[in-house]
Image (tube, rainbow, N blue to C red; front, side, top):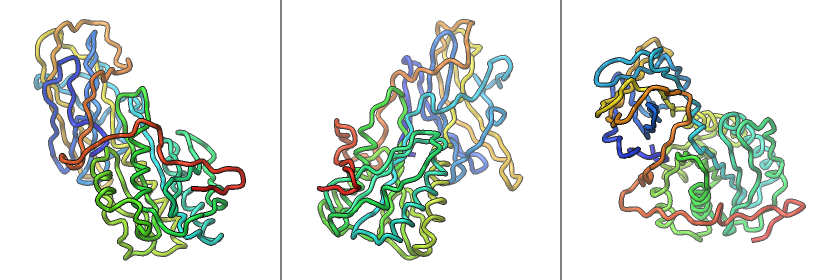
Length: 357
């Protein structure tokens, strides 16, 4: 998990975070909020092997303090909407190199719309395009919950450079995701790259692109045409293969389902602690039954300081993740320097759908 912090220090109180693997399920505490009068909230990620675990309910979570199971009725334990504290965004990057034929463009638009229908109900999406030029083209932005997901711009934009600046496009797209600003303490971004072939332009070296990729805080996955296409195999979060061009909408729909699950595997567990003083160990446990009828469980543990805790807690209060640490890089030796300007290297389409470098 790249986009979110692995540990936290809230009010100087959170001393350790951990995760454990039981029954194939990993529960990881990403961040924690501890605030008076006695509010505790844990932002957790739940996965089964490499697969996200989604659609969990409050009944699937148990909270223990100092080894004692806390009563949901006594503590008001609940699941808060994770988007209250999470800046989520997906960037879909479309390949328009070599100016695709009209019928190809129509298919690309249909594919993008299939992706958007899966993702936009819960996560905002930016659609950008690239060819051989040095910039990205702004195609369309879709807020969370948008009801219209058409992208006719993909059928109209003309390519002015027949080459393919794949390395540069990935680098610019990652910078755009990293540069966005939000008042929310946790950022979760995903880049989805559609490529019809390898980089041809050489504007950005493979080493420079790799450094940007592996120092990124974002999930990155791809979509290609052909079962043997390997030009995106370097992406860390996998590639969806369309059998042929006609199957592209199906592949994009699959990619959209995967991305939606990546963003739905995070849960915000909130409760009112019965503690009133001293150090407390806390453990959040997930127990559920999978679609095959197997019981799965996992837990994550840590400690906090309950000094000054008092009655009057409302578990629905907005958690305060006041000191979120910097998210880790994929490679500890890689640099992570996000640009100051929002979405660098993007040009908006002028009237008529054409654009210049």
